[in-house]
Each structure stands twice: as structure tokens, then as C-alpha cells.
Amino acid sequence: MDGEAASAKEKIVNAAIKIFSQCGYEKTSINQIAAEAGVSKGLVFHYFSTKKELFLSVYRQAVLIYIMEICEKLDPDQRDFLLRIQALILLKFELMKKHPEIFDFIKTAYLETSLQVKEEIAALNRDLLDQSFGLVYENIDYSLFKPDLDRKSALATMLYTLEKWSENFVRQNADKEWNSLSAKEILDALAPFLSLFRVSFYKEDSYGKCD
Image (cartoon, rainbow, N blue to C red):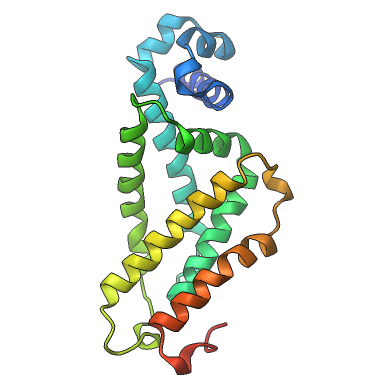
């Protein structure tokens, strides 16, 4: 793809992020996106055969940006699973502040109720979450856990619960400016879950080991 074509496609993607964020999937038209991008409707369809394909393609691209940046910044030497997850969640919220336009689109997609894309968004979320599992589980110090614990089930339970917590936190704060949220607010909301998991799954003598 030459520079001019890449530039046109990038304009379409950026316009889609903006218009979908403002209007949602159902109320957005390809005409609006083409006008925002300053290109013809036909050129939009040259790159994306349908509005649905454009929406899902942009969503996957947006989430992959977050995953790649998290992979670059998450410390693999932090071997306490709960502290690694805590760092992961803080990174996610920092990236929301760094890329507000992309996050607004991701937030819109998370809250999307249109049956045309809702199931596909859920499936993409599962696939993308699976892709990040390797990084989250790598080099974990299992000696911190209770010896008779089913580690696989415990790790899956904690990760799933905290992913759902993140989604609910986003929903509950959907009307807030993300730059106004501090790390302390996020950690205070997260703390009860981390404390519960540490008591439930960790050996008693490891509670304060990595805090």
C-alpha cells in the first residue's frame, strides 16, 4: 500500500473512531464517516465492504494498540500475580488517558446494544483477552499460593473477576473525564477484590510479602 492509500485509509479509520464514538453503531452512516474523512463514500467501501466490517476492524485495531503498549510496559519481573494484575489495570487506565479518542470508541463498543455487532464484539473481547493471557501468566511465583489450591481455576477466577470489575468500573464512570481519575481512586476501588483474593488463595505468610 503506497503512502497516499495508507493516508486515505488512516483518515477513514480516524473518522470512524470519532463518528462511531459520537453516534454509536446504529446512528452512524458511511456518508458521515466519508464526510469527516474528506473522502468519497466509494473509497470507504473500497477498504471496508460494510459498515459492520469497518466497525469491527477499527475495534480490533484499537484494542490491539492497548495490548501492544501494555506488553511493552508491564514488568515481567513482578512475580506476584495480584500485583501484576493491579499494575495491568493501572496501565489500562493510563492508556485511556493517553489515547482518549481511541478509548471513547472502545467504551462505545463495550456499551453497544446493537444486535448486529454485540455478539461479534463479545467474541473479539474473548479472543483478545486470550492473547494477553500469556503475558499475565508468565513467570508467576506459585509459591505464594496455598499448596492445595487448584491454581488454574484460581488464576482464571481472579482474572475473569477483575476483567468484569474493569468493565463495570468503566460503565459506572462513563460520564466522567478520564483525566480526572487518579490512580488512588482506581486502587481504592480495586483494593477489596485484591484483599479478598489474597486471603482466599494465598498462603497466610505471603500476605505482606510483595505489598
